Image: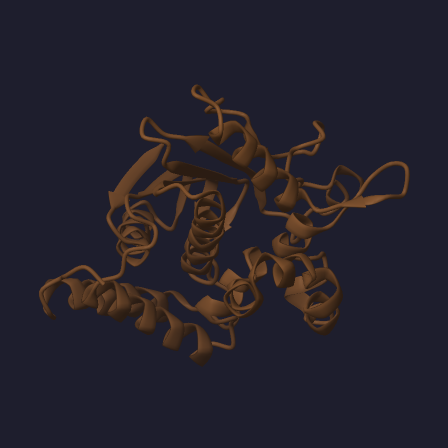
Length: 267
C-alpha cells in the first residue's frame, strides 16, 4: 500500500504519478488524499493544462470530459439539480455512441436507477434529501450516506451486478462512493476504484468527484471536507497511443511546473 496527500487535485495526481513511476508503473492499494478538493493554484492549473494537452495530443478524452462522465457540472451550472436530473434524457443519448461510454456513465447511474418493479428513482436526489433531513437533527447520522451496490433503498448505485459482472475488462471501475459528515458537519467523500488509469482518467476522476462533492455540500448547506480516492490497483498505463517515454516526459514537465513557476496562492 502507498499513500500520498496534497492540497489540490492536480498536486495529488502528480505525487501519485511519481509514486507509480518509482514503483514500476503499478501499485496495489494506492490511497490519494486531496485536502481541499475545490482548491486551485497557479501550479495546479499548470499541471492540469499540461495533462490536458497531453491527453488531447494522444487522442484521449480531456480532463473535463472525463469529469463530466462522473458528474455533469455543465448541466448543474446552467440549470441546477433539475437539469442534472434530466441528464438521462438530454445528455446521455448524445454521448452513448462514444466507445468509452458504451457501458453507461457514472453520471447516468447517479440520476437513474431502475427498480425491480420497473419503476425508476433518482439516487442522487434521494441522497440529498436524506442528508437534508439528517442535518435538521441535533445529532445527525454521520456515516449512512453510501453510493454502493444499491442494496438499500437510499444508496446511490454505481455497480450494476446484472450487467457489470459480465465485463472482464472495461466498464465499471468506480465501485463505491462513501459520504460522511465530519466533526464540523463538513462533507467527506471517499471513492473506491477497483482499477484506475492514472494517465487517461485519474485527474478527470478527481475533478468529477470533487464537483459531485461540491454539489451535494452546496445543496444541503455545509462545507466541503477532504476527498480520498482509494485505487485497489493503480497503473500508469501504456497502450498503442501511450508510450512510456511520453508519459515519463509528462511527469517531468509537471514536476518542473511545481519546482519552478509562480508562488502558489489560493484561487
